[in-house]
Length: 418
Image (cartoon, rainbow, N blue to C red; front, side, top):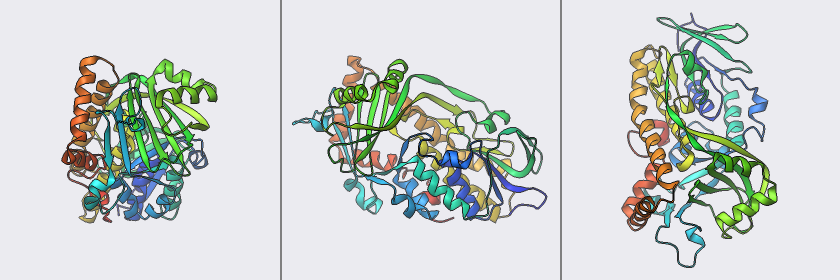
């Protein structure tokens, strides 16, 4: 694919989970592809590179299956069969009589619609990176790392990028998968809109005393949501949003003090969780690119949109981008179109624009609604949770939407190869 006057068909900047997924799809389709990343591969594959785990919606896991990496990832993953949500001082599931504001999502309720898939999969980021990069190494894709991007100069039929060491490469298209501080977005002149939240997310891994049984817990505190998400070997991933000062104090506290504070917040439903490994504190913000495309440029993942982690949809949103962009580019190339042209890239932008913006606004609304103890707002949200919990049809819609399986889906999200 592509004309031989360019070094590559596509230059993809950013080799993280979103970028590597897209790179795998494009390389398998026969594009001459180079992946450029600032961090050396061995750094990105290190267990403590970011210390996080990700909740993967079942539709996005189907994408990985279609790309041939689902089996390897499933071997490292913990299925989520239930999600328990509580708005109150104690987790509703730990009470003898659960609070009326307790909400339960059960995978069995949509099993006939999902062919028995769980609600989601919890996978440590280090495993995702390792599996994707191993699969990518089996393709003809070129990895250029470590390397920084200095400039992008688009022309009529191709674009030139200049690296930090003055090397120049040409391609029909440049894709930015390089995160919230995207250099591709900046040099393409694409602005952003958004704001920082007065919160930070504390991330840690816990060893549990009692079996988690594949159940994900989230409950809401005045400082922000606290999620305990199941991992393999009866471990859990903790994502705790608090105001910045408290988050920094939690991240720096002695392990015993941190565990005691967590126990006071979460109760004894999972026994006495113990910390495993380091803790991390990440600033939280909402940030939306003014456009997902520029001159021979496209953005995916955090380069295009950063959202609050309250619904665990950040990576899932990026993976939906990859499925849509891969399909648009592959179909255009097969038809003999210039896949880096504005005409083709507009199809991608139009496909993804509404989903990205609506999810960003939804998570922002949820954060503001649930990160407060104001009586009128608390009464309204508690009423909403109670209503949804009593209406199976509503619960099914919520689960299908969270699973990434609503709307005009790209083929990869249906588990179909391109």
